[in-house]
Amino acid sequence: MGGSTGFVTRAFDPDRDTWIEPTWLTGPPDATLVIDGDYLNRSELRDLWQYSVLVETADEAVDTLSVVPVDDAGKVHGSEDRAAEQAQADRLYRTEVRPRSRAAAVVDLTDPARPQRRFFDSC
Image (cartoon, rainbow, N blue to C red):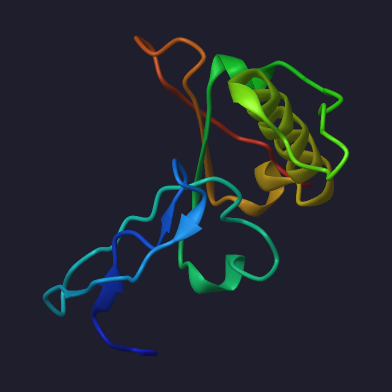
């Protein structure tokens, strides 16, 4: 659908951990599509965007490295285990992808009452 105005708003149900049949929608030709989600600056996705904003919160400012508890089949269970898995995935993403260097803008929301644009020049 390259160049079209077609898009989907949902393709995966995280609560059920399953893909869902997407419903295609169409916007006007002058629409601006804003995509929100984790890990959007991965190498296989980052060239799809003309502009990306990395929003950092207090939780993301803390450098967390967790060991993810799994059962014998390698499955993660429970909300605490999922939180640990998410923290580990976030750490891996920040280390390997370096989203701060990939995003066109970085917004610091560690104090939600005072959001600030951060500049991380590479020169």
